[in-house]
Length: 120
Image 1 (cartoon, rainbow, N blue to C red):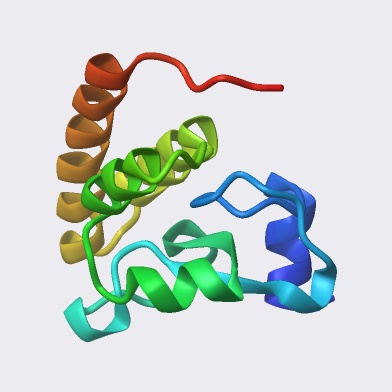
Image 2: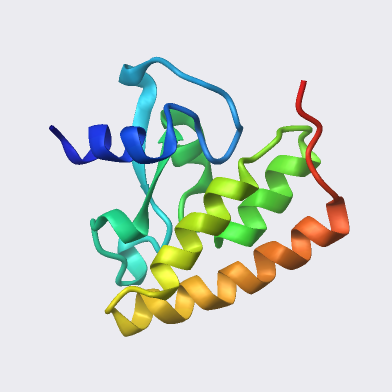
């Protein structure tokens, strides 16, 4: 089983950024802490994202990209992102742990400001 398959089994075949379900071939393993900022390719630092969202996010912080997606009318899966950031905060990597704690706090602020997403 590939790492992406394990992530899909853990979180579902839905993009954390746009909230939409996608075909397996359209899904990628998204680094929460980007590789360019010392993020590793471990389950704690990865989430499921569609190819388009993964490309558009680039290296923006999680909370900033969630805010941008919400401004476009998309419904990011904040629940999955909160769980992923909590895992990252508990990781053994100092850089990932610090990033996870900071982004989790900022994501919760964004969620309070915008309220729960409409699910339809």
